[in-house]
Image: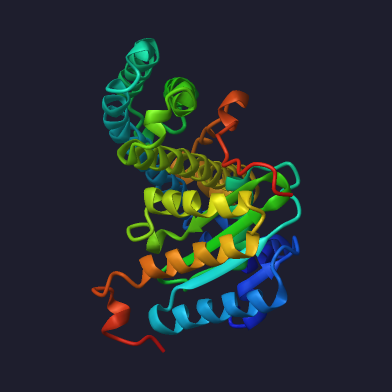
Length: 147
Length: 199
């Protein structure tokens, strides 16, 4: 389903250097090992005229992000040619990665996109998301390691 | 379930078996519609809960925009007056009244979301930014929940109108088709993040 390293980072718009892709995928893997949350990073050359919100929800659902029982998937979607970025959050993580938290992370990323540093912007977004997801040590994941 | 139904079509006798005539599948489909409706209703409620806070925050910064704020407050009050229960979902007039009122609120909110362009102080107000993120997120959830609801309604309506489930739907339940929520064309546009010219 979602256990292939390559699946974690899908740079379809080709804006992330390969070496950075590997680093991003490793971070995502480390996160999953610790919290079971699944973080994917997807870039697309075009949204095909769709709104990024609709596109990203459909994409996150089709990737089946997150464990089915927890709905704990997160996806960073970047559409550079549409000048759009979105963080799609599974229901299971909405209490942690709330709208205003995701909004702030995007606002932190935007200056780097504007400076034409997409890989750095995405790395910053990933780092901040992981920081938020690891911040709540009361989550059951920290008591019982999921198989 | 589908395998059974497909089999039922092949063997005429099976059409008389209870399993093949919608005795179970019709209520199951209806429960799904009701569950999707509950999600949508919760999203509308969340939006209604957010608006007073947002209005109060904006008030301090943009007194000139009182007409926008009054319109939003009024639309929210109007939408709050119209309730729609799960049992009303087959009533086109009630669904339309509810949907129209919520649609007017969606329209009223749009200028509120663009205010920050004219008021730089608002842009740096963390409270305002947080509320606006929440409102935008809620609008997204409303759109997603409405689509899920409509898909579920379509499945239900198809089921109660097609053989063999139509027999059970009519005989046992007197099932009526449910009404989908039509989105107005102008309600489709939500603001997106623009990060300038970096292509």
